[in-house]
Length: 147
Image (cartoon, rainbow, N blue to C red):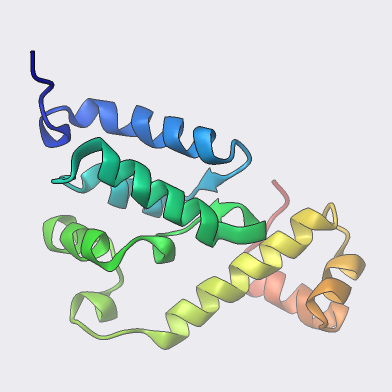
């Protein structure tokens, strides 16, 4: 008996993604963009390749415990770009948008600091080593709301 490859069992991929994340660290969350990249990929290396990719992303998520699209391996994100165009216009044209990447990282760090401080802006600003007024502006700029 031979199990069909993952590309022939696409309906199993979301369950496997969740299973491997929970197996590595149940506290880690995955953003929809990252989830879509993983779900849309063909996985020629099958389940082992998927598991290894998730292990790597869980480690890279660090203290923030959030898997973002920027943690996905280039081969996976580029494959997804070619099939459904998830990335930004600049990236689709083959250009790296440094501003977009830095903004995304800044937003993730601010969100992580707010979560750690239980949404107390004073403590979040201190942990980020920025004035509270700057934090308030960034919260507004990135449309960050309590979860």
